[in-house]
Length: 616
Image 1 (cartoon, rainbow, N blue to C red):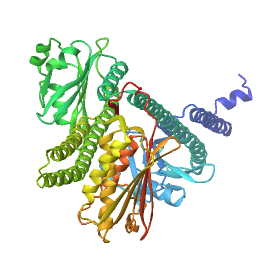
Image 2 (cartoon, rainbow, N blue to C red):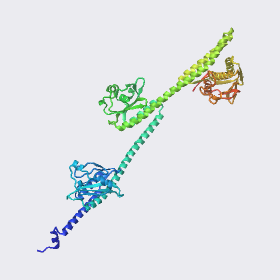
Image 3 (spheres, rainbow, N blue to C red):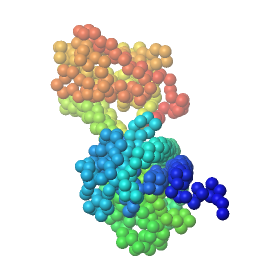
Image 4 (cartoon, helix red, strand yellow):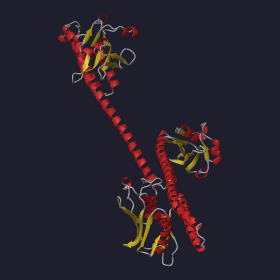
């Protein structure tokens, strides 16, 4: 029987051809495995899965028992791995320089150890803890395309019991290079994904902030359009109910005197009824929220111990769910903002709470601003009343002086007619004092009336002359009255009397300190204006009050001066629609000029000569 050469080769396994064929098959298997590794590395960007794939193929390729791939931390101080074949998968962390893997990461050199226990760098403790017996080790660094170490791959225990060969080193070097690139790509991908997630989260936050800003802007516009606090709070309540989607709601404010909550505004079923009710602080969910200053969602109020069922039954409205937030200020609780019954029988969510908290913040600001304005208005009115009282007391000096003077004259004469004339002058002064008190009362009620009437100047000047002569008695002051115009004018006679008395009294005080002088009153017309001129021969206006002469409490050198006289004068003149000015020179006296409208007001006609009131 004859055999072909091919048959002779196939049946001689120990021959050189058989060995070559076996080696060829081995190389083909390695090549196929390298291709599989390449495909595997390109099949996923999931880092954990990628590490598992690499180690599975490396273990198979190098015919080893197990292998581990460590990644180097960004700061280069630590190695970590979640892959450990041959046992449970767990995380391993090593400091750079610690153990074989740590030494390779630090030095960047390849380590091929036939006997691990003979190498001092090997940490036998790992074997003792795990019960595993390490014999041979092949460990090398993984470098990226820039040559930077990104990790370490370590293979343990060759299956045939021998050491790892140079060929194993070459294979591991090739696979490690591919793995490093894939790991870098995976990290880059994860970084991009992470950045995208951050961008999406940032975008969502930005959109939420924009929504909140738009909402706050809309609420601010509605608040500015409100006439008073009640309308403002009602608009906020309607807006909150609409945005959150509820059937009812209310805003309760704290009454400081009784420490109770009262319904300032309410909407929905029984809304009109609850406006008349009060809730003690701490009672019910709304009382608890106001007392504790904490928001609350109660999607099942009946099961909440803080819910006051008796109050709900009293008003005939038992809510399905409640959302309540406190209205807060630095000084304490202002009240509470509550919404009831989410539309569609749904539950209140944290997003609803956030939205109501946002609106409640605006409500708190509105309440504080309204109260601040009210307090400021009251303080301003009290201050104004105080200033007016000061002015009245200041001006009462004149009629009281005149009354005293006429009373002394009455005591000196027996002529009935003359005594009657003095009595008439005294009664006029009492009328003037009564007018002053009425003015204060009108101002306290928020009224300020100007009583205009037709005035015959010749009679008015005669009365003024008598008053001023009495005012100047015993002060060595000469009075000159020059009535260039003696016709008809329209003004508040009592108030203009106060103006003239204030100017004359100031002039008398200034001239008396220098031994006396002359006070000249001139009445004329100019350009449709009634012009009063008051000139004295005193020392002139002190420099320290020049420029602020008409301000409240501006005074200089007067022992009993209040600084109110000329401020009152200016106020009365401006109420008439007139103007006041002055000029003064040191040592040459001072002249005040007052201009008032001469024409009759449109509200007066020829048949009406009585008073007409102008409210200001």
